[in-house]
Image 1: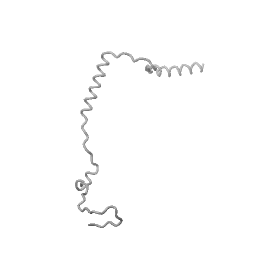
Image 2: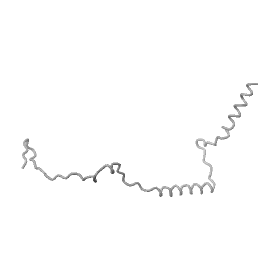
Image 3: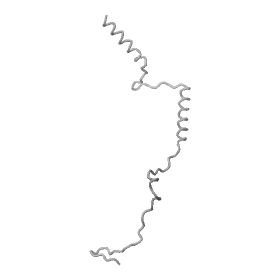
Image 4: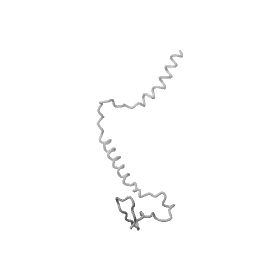
Length: 95
């Protein structure tokens, strides 16, 4: 009697799980043809996706330390004093 009750309980718990199982295509199995309504829905979804991408604003340059700096960043320092040295000698003297 307990054995039959255990089988009945396990069957009642397993039945909804098998009912929710969708068909999973096997390897080599061809996809089903889509209906016209499904094709139109896919096309509308793709167009809505493209429109939503266009609504995203372009992200400008970000400078996280911009509020911390007191002035704009300075350009690379230029050399004002150039010194010439003789090449090839061990003792280079400034001219």
